[in-house]
Length: 460
Image 1 (cartoon, rainbow, N blue to C red):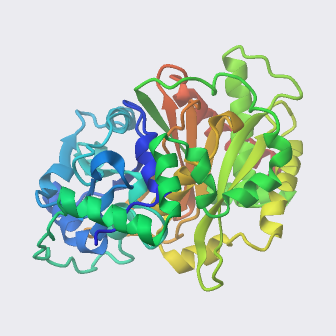
Image 2: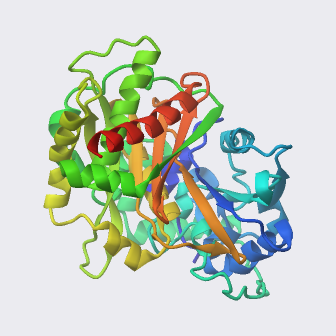
């Protein structure tokens, strides 16, 4: 019997509006690669056995009698999924981000495995970029990792295995699909109700299936009683995206934390709050002392089984105090708001998570996006994911990864999503915005960098 999509995964498909994709993307910038893009393409193909889901497509059940199933794609063509591209001279970051924005705006083909990799050459200094797109339905836990996670090695001389001789299994036919669906109903009568809920797209009925969301809602109940504050971030989405990036030195963030307390995550939320404050003011938006921007902050937590830390993601609602002009008061308020997360005993320390999972940011950003889709769009203004990565260099095809930027998908009703990843002494921030409503997202990215510099200088 073919593996059936969970109700939550099926809901991602039902609720993905036409022209408004929810895939998670990432940008890896590498040193010059010996052998060029061909070497990287061979690496992707060789690592596919580590992510078997990436050679499977979704097969619907006739009459929508049950959730779709996963099946090997008999027409799988790695050349379709691994695409070569280039930016024109001089190969600036702005040109790369323009390409990433256009790639991010295009939905994935439902008739094929739900992922794509773009290999980009032409960057200044001979650097190359790897841009990944993965549908959240492919990543339902740390056991189903993102393709970017398996491309990286801790050593530049890690061997690249030869591509395997993969043979697809037979795709189940309509009669078999209907028979299996009816068999599921006999064995599990509640499947009828779950499928009906999925068919009408009621994602809220499946929100509790994102492990930890329910607990996060209880903790955030006081904030969730009223809708999220209205503003330029709360809008109907257009079809196009604009991606911007920012960088911070991890040592600067540690200096701020050591001087005023909290965690690195608290400091990053404080930085983002200050940047959002200045950005709103630059747009002529009213900013009062009580002005806040409500963020959904996914946090990796201890699973139900004590031997599976980090396998779950809890969603917490946090009001970013953008109306507070004093950055240290903002930090104190955010530290207090997040203290309940770390004090619960369920959250997983950054160093523990890295030790357990290696380079897991792509997977955990995808899990964060899943948590965001499980909540009502009226409850928050933006999603902020922050995933720790290793503080040592990683390599792809023998070339060192210089930078890595997450691109978290937008949720209906929100114009901005922010992803943060720490790696090799730096924090890399990816900002994904609705091009029509938040077209000046590059201004916000610049303000993030300025805020980090100003806070670190004030402490020193």
